[in-house]
Image (cartoon, rainbow, N blue to C red; front, top):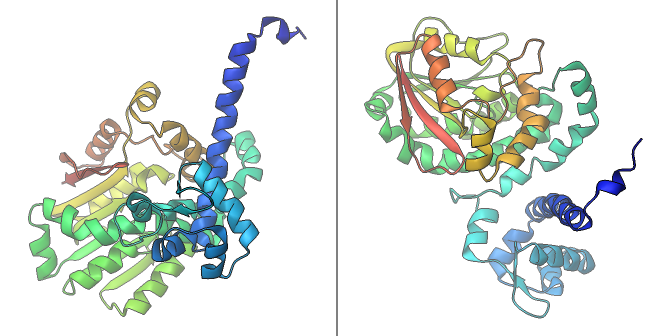
Length: 360
């Protein structure tokens, strides 16, 4: 084997090493965000204001030394504001993002999936050898909870007041009473919000994750909603009688093993004057454009290996689209092939998702 050191540029090596280990810094900072959310530390700083580790220990009942190191890590990463001495606090922006689950910008829920995402690393070498990925239930019940917390703020804050009014005629139909399907409904947050707001309509959620369905049914019972139903689509699939006036798919088509078949099933289930609202990760039709135009491309490709692409390859012959695999161009082409004739992009100003209104 040739001696590679003969061709190394020492300064380039130093810069490259700094870059690589800088990426590990992001991973450890993410782990600290997970702990801050899980242990209620952001909420304690929000409610009680800036604190030293001793003051935070008094508020939370947790061990001061551990809190001190966590505060140091968060301050060094620029996540908490260092106010001098040993005191740390949160800016209003940090509160919105990390401590206020009622704010549409809340994002700490995304980090609650971190242990489950990292937990599959030991299983992925086998996927690389066989080509077969892991379904979402491989992440266990906590994985379903993590997905739920990641997407719930948008459903709770923006779906009804912002998104639905952009769909011509939909609000009037929902008020009057129609049938609605949410395909890939997860743990049912969107449907329970809709069920409360539109008591004359009936909402059906279709999902294959047993853990998500269990959470969805528990949520429905707790809310006392008789107009919401959940279905295991492996044994109770979408009907083919064109009964639904509104169909939604939120961040799930790219995860599916056969999204084309799902699109055809939606075409059979939707009324002739119905509307299909798609939310998908903003993606470009090429790798280079994704990297050039999406500052989170590296993270999203990594999440794809850990989760999205893995799910879409969890059955033999899976489509394997992945997190950035369903661009507007591909979505337009696939919906046309499934029998839909109208495809309209909608700009909701969402930082991550693209939205499309699709009609028969």
